[in-house]
Image (cartoon, rainbow, N blue to C red; front, side, top):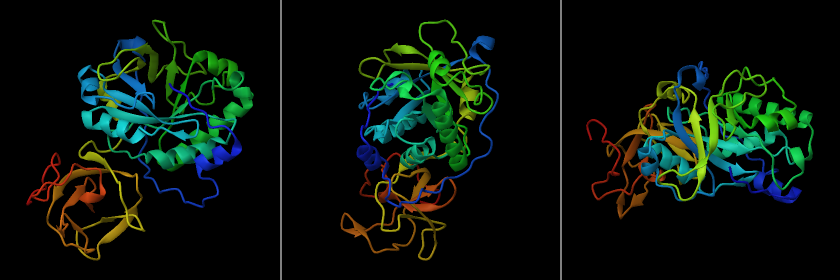
Length: 351
């Protein structure tokens, strides 16, 4: 996993947007996330995957999928510096058929776990759409810092506790914890406080089976080392999921029907999500960067705000998997054709 450190209090505050007064976006609370996952040693069932960061900005995800990889974790931030490729990497992985999740590189030297969790969640817009894995916290040494980042086990434990608690509060998901057995023992004090609640992503290279730190009875994900994956330039982190593909799908809660697209432009209030594409049917607003799950598109509906595109009123709508509607051209959907439709999105019944 690649690292970039933001140094200095001013840089950290700027990266976090502290003092801006911006409210955190509301997030859905799915049902219970965790299901028993058989450890790989028990039945041999594993699913191959990988994790990527800003060091791999241009990935051919179709080739990755073709190589047999079925999940990807993507860095949302190295420290408090955003991965500029995060959105493209995540959407590309999902569009190719992989399940995808986001991870955050822990920095207990700079801020509390709660503050960092809020910043992280505001960036990733976690949605239980059937394609998104639980948020993950990357717990390891920052090589620009002293051993254990210069803080004690109590500080690490408090940071991890606060981060995972905030993720749970805002999303309903139990955050995955990435760590090596040595770092957990040496820097987190071998704590067993998280083994009953948070899935383990263990980093243990060059072994037939990884050691289990902190009282975890089995791993959920295992980073086995680095290697070559078709579609990715250079070496990349290699991972496996400790269970079957069916178990992995259950680990990404929500409906799998629909295509994920991101909101790329909004009005002053945000993007209107409406119960029907007609005047007076606005039910909520969502912010730029939110990922919405599109089931189909329709050209039927009123032109409610007078906007035009390509010299004509724009009336193409996307129907979301929850049955509500949004204007297509606010999304990072394919370019609209002359017939008013975006290619690649199914037409809704009736046009």
